[in-house]
Amino acid sequence: MTDFLMLAFTFLIAGVIAVPIAARLGLGSVLGYLIAGIAISPLLGLLGVDVVSIQHFAEFGVVMMLFLVGLELEPRRLWDMRGRLLGLGGLQVLGTALAVTFAGLALGLGWSTALTVGLVLSLSSTAIVLQTFNEKGLMQSDGGQAGFSVLLFQDIAVIPMLALIPLLAVPELADMVSHAGEHDDGEHGNTLSLVAHLPGWAAGLVTLASVGAVVLVGGFLTRPLFRFIARTRLRELFVAAALMMVIGIALLMSLVGLSPALGTFIAGVVLANSEYRHELESDIDPFRGLLLGLFFMTVGAGINFVLLFNQVWLMVGLTLGLIAIKAAVLYALAVIFRVRGANRWLIALGLAQAGEFGFVLLSFTVANAVLPVDIAERLSLIVAMSMLLTPLLFILQDRLIAPHFSTGQVERDEEAIAETHPIIIAGRGRVGGIVDRMLNAAGFSTTVVDYSYAQLDMLRTFGVKAYFGDATRPDLLHAAGIAEARLLVVTIDNRDQINALVSYTLRNYPDLHVIARAVDRDHVYRLYELGCRDIIRETYDSSIRMGRSAFEALGIEHDRAMEMARTFDMTDRRSMVEVADVYDTSIPAHRNKELVARVRAIAEEWEPELRRKMDDIRLGRPVQD
Image (cartoon, rainbow, N blue to C red; front, side, top):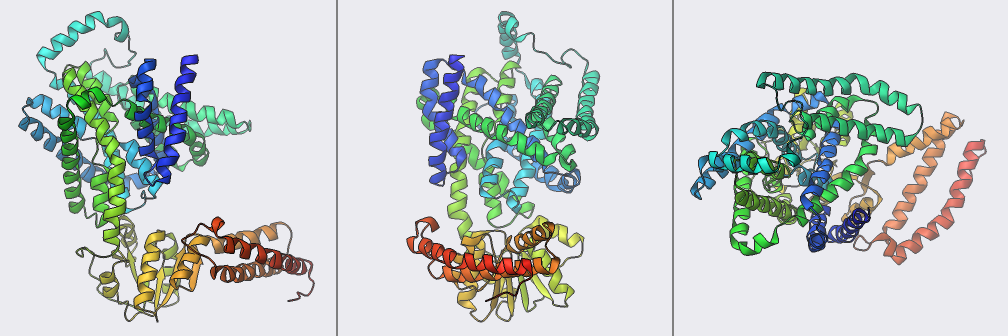
């Protein structure tokens, strides 16, 4: 027990120290966990800790992550993804496997060994990529959605790989493994399996029945179960039930030889329409985060530095070669599947590493006499090193490549804009869509530009006219008729892109009226500093309406509630203008002494007046200005 507590304490203190530092430096939490694992690896060696065993346990974080991903995907949305899922994902696995296979043949490997290496290294790290996409807010981008399709197909592809790899066994290695198994039968011979001794057709039926059971349980039995548990009003029972379901599905998939991650993903998709979805998310997410952090640390701690230092240039060269091959294949497919601009590089660099399932497949290849131990050890090191380099590739994409595209210094590949109108809407998502519909309903024609190909593809299905393109690019704005436009409505869901577009537009077209979406209060001040005067906080109006509804729920008449909401709105807007003059976006708000003093002075002066007016309205008294 003491050894376990010591181990847990070591991992926790390393993560608590390294991750905040990495996040503060803009390196991301994944790199922080990897560095923490590298830092504690000597201590784990002194304690005699089996890092591989801990890694197998921590891989359950990947299982939970895919369950949560499934909860976000309705079956209909998954069906809509089928083109990229099968096309982009399938061609990525096939293209990368073939490219690595030919590279292995060129290096002198036998064809079966080279093909096995190609299959293992064709997979990318679902854990690292999705974690980074979520941290950077990239999941809803075109590149994020395309990358997710590739990762999802890769996770599914593990199943046929597990069936194919034993067929590539080398006879000489098989004799050695069989001989070693005679001395090791007590340890590995009793692994529980529901399909181990069944003929192929029976094993297939059991496997299909297991998947059907997951769908059946998820679709019909979980609702009454969770309803029954919810009546107890004991949160710990709901957490226990959620964990029981995920662990049970993962165990069932393992017993029939399938990927536990795939099984839990299917269960998540089945439960995507459940009323208990959000409760499941909130209960599972803390465990997912802890186990993923532990998994990343074990990857760092598991790097074989003795082998690395003995063959440093070979290992580094092979790792960089793998990243280059995968990036080239992914970039070519991104072009073919019309992923554009910086999103091409997001896919190419973000998914250029090998993945966590590579460790599983490498152990499987050794056990089935497909790869010798020395090659498997080198491949494990390449997998770990490529994962370690992935956060640096994301930093390269984020800081060097993405800004290059947002400033318009690249060749134009957007759609030609056939007609222009006096109103331009940049971004046609949940905010821009409502604005566009209101303007069209009033008889105004708009030119809509959006940078999500998937979003526009969906809109065109319903007959909505929109153009694909990056609205921050000057040449596209010119093609959209910005020089003759009366109004620009900026509803992009990205703070930096909003700032860039507003800054460029007001600097070059000062007479153009610009309405800009602001992410939060600080963003309002930044846009005010850039010269914009028609700024809409994205949650402000809905919050005012909710406050008005709260007044009415408390028994205040509708007209008085409306007047109270209007009074609060006017006071808040006046205070925004007062504070804007002293707001400095280069200084954190709480460190700007002049700003803090102004806010406190306004609060002391205006809050009593606001309270008096609200009381007057609520009680039906004449309001005194």
